[in-house]
Image (cartoon, rainbow, N blue to C red; front, side):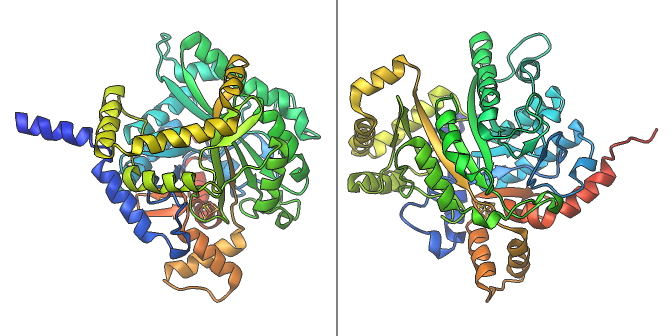
Length: 466
Ligand code: SF4
């Protein structure tokens, strides 16, 4: 390599926004429907959206009502080799079209049914494609599984950090020790035990973690969302995520009228549990009918949002920082490279530093000031937390909406047209390298999963013939 080539490489590696990220973001923004091109929109400006795997291991050993998997998901054998190969291909395609960095969920049925070696291999190939993986689990596994995942056979550390999203709610049946929970509170010890495994992992092996708590919401547990929020806020979960149930997947598991649960009702109950308003309009991922999200500082029982939509200085700072720095990513690189990127960004826009400090100062004031922070730090209740509601759609509207979109047509039917608008602004994508397509997760579960699982059933039968 010549000196000129080396310098070019260093320049590229330390450029604040990677050129492929820039291209992917610009394409994303161009393709978004006009109704979501709002000032608070993060897609296409700082993020390309979330990604998830499919066609991997649809089997699960719990039974939930509802379940988003098609009826024959449990007829497919969990096969590590198949999973790793599929994940590799899907992630490579995402790297190609979505750029060098994104968050991706290792999701199928239950991730802990994978042999720990295969699970580790899947996480590794996701990272090789610049994806920050998050393993989606029901949380019913033992510490030994976690150890086998993060450590090699000779005890060496495979990963410095792991991310898990654990699903706990009273609609799930078959959990060890809580086979048929009667209420959400009954699951609190299990929620706590799950986080304890990761605290032990950090203490004993220095492996850090990012933990999300997931809960499906139906009419039967809607009123318990507030108590779950209150309990989980006191636990070391980084994200509290709620999913109103939708009529998709296995129809045998639809037991209630899910239409009674709206994204607004769920958010109200979360606010009730948090004991305060949780302003979410400062930032938006995709369509507000699909996603609600807010991030902030949790300190000694208070939550201080980063961008308060009612504070003009906050929204002005958001606009300016997105304009100048949208697309900078922080993970998946060495500290010196990140430091060089941030330094170049600061030198390019030196007047943004006081703007950023202003955002931090206002957030700290909202959190209660230095004394509250000190108290929170002493009591280990200081941390960045986010609240999410992800509102999947019913298969009955997704299927016709997608069919028309495939033909470039817009529906006259309001519900189907709404589905088309939401699918067009989707922030949760699945990769189909075989057809060169990215599809919304709603389409994946409502339209594509049944045929895919049928094919998997043939490819990976439960009983292997000798
Ligand atoms: S997966 Fe469905 S609910 Fe989620 S963002 Fe995409 S279209 Fe909206």
